[in-house]
Every structure is written in C-alpha cells, then in structure tokens.
Image (cartoon, rainbow, N blue to C red; front, side, top):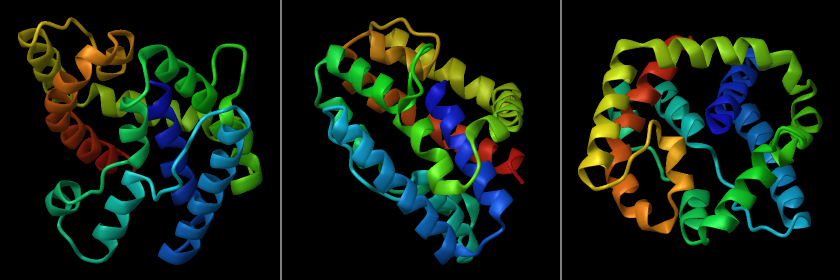
Length: 194
C-alpha cells in the first residue's frame, strides 16, 4: 500500500508541475539520487532508476499506445535487489524506504527537497486516486485473479503487498502471478490520474 501511495505522489507531482519530459525526468532522478543517498545512510543499497510509471508516461507522450507502453515498461532494478534479500532485510529495506507508523522513510524525507512541496500537500489527493484505482472493476478482477493464482501455488495472500510477509519461498510464485495484476493496475492508474 505504501508503495502505491508513493507512486501516487509521484504521478500527482508530475501532473502538478506541468513540465515536459526532460525537466520532469531531471526532477524524478534528483529525487531518486536523494533517496539513494538516504538509503545508503541507513545501510541499504538502492538503484537510481526512472520509475516504471514515468517510463510508461514518456512512452505515451512519444506516441505509443497505452497497451504497448505498459507491455514494454522496464523492470524496476530495486525489485530485483529486494528479491535477493532475506525476508527480514526485505521488510527493513521497505521500512527504510517508505517508513513506518513512527518514521518517515527515505522517500518521504527527501520529497520536499526534490519537489519543493511536502507529501502532506499531496497525501489526500493521492489517497483519493489510489481509492479510485482500487475500486476500478478491472483492478478488483485482477486482484482476485492474483489471489487465486497465489492460492493455486500454495500461498495465501489478500494483496500483492502481502507477499513480503511470506518470505523468499513465495517470490517465484509472486513474480509469475503479479504481472497480469500490475498491468491492469497500471492501466487503471493512468486512466484515473488524468
């Protein structure tokens, strides 16, 4: 959930700044650099990369159809990095990046410096956007398919975020089952964020 909220903040920031591709990309990469520095201070690796949602938006601006932009989206190198960690380090990495109930996390700590406004300014809008996406019938159907796919592989989860509680053994099943869900989610996210 925190990851989806963070992506929501990014989409809202991109919309709010109204900039074209190059300035937006520069801001995003500036934020990524700040996050990486913070994560390293906390003892974790973090790969600076253009976020997947921005890559899809750039492909759309370049004239690619939505389905093609989503199908050709790059993988997030931090997903690979995270999957290689033991379960307890995965949880700690996620807490360092996205925070906990008592800590802000590197994404939040660096947001104002990168974007000139705080996450609290965008929080309500982002939560509304995420709620719209999660309520979208196509996303609900894809979530059910994900849960059933995981159940068929012997794992019980209620959402993709729940996989981190299952440990390393669930990662291969998750990687297979989550792809269709993420494609539908990303498509709905782009639709509702306009």
